Image 1 (spheres, rainbow, N blue to C red):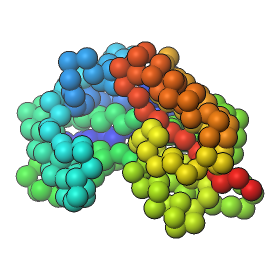
Image 2: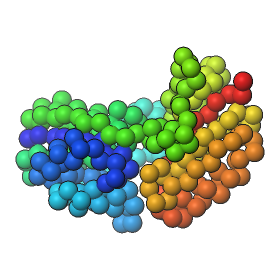
Image 3: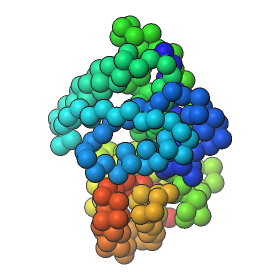
Image 4: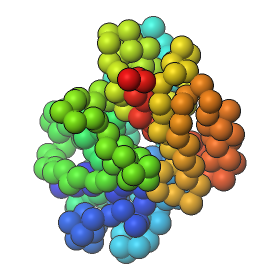
Length: 241
């Protein structure tokens, strides 16, 4: 069996020629189903329809999303449950399967780790490869017409839940993912370039001094959620010089 882990950006318009060619050569794609009205699953289905590939769905295993004390252990348990669910599909169907990853597989996505788990279990011989996609920070920078870092300076990428500790460690130019306003307190004088549901019909953009535009971000998040039924935030935060 072969697994192809394919970065798809935020839908059919972001699929690269390389990924499109790989997807056409797959027998089917596999995706989790979080709920009956899963908007992200619908976007994956639109990619499959665009390239003539059937989509096989599995129910997403339960996960503790309330920021548990042992967060890595909770995620590891969830990954193992997903690995078991995906392995069943691979064994049943065989052939070449595609896993369609939002953005790029290298950045805040667990698909590669889960496929590695399946291979490491040794119960199912799996050959796999990875093809890159367009990431949310790339789209954010393009939409706002900015460079993510200043000349010769670094950019620190963090999930929103780790924003506060990054700031306390002295980071002053941060790409923040996987969260909305989490940790924004005390950063009112920083500049923010923010986006939600980047690359989709429900995309929202806000930029400015954080203390001035926080109400605009709140309103934009509500519009994005109302339009799509879900919100994915990405932001660049930079300390005032």
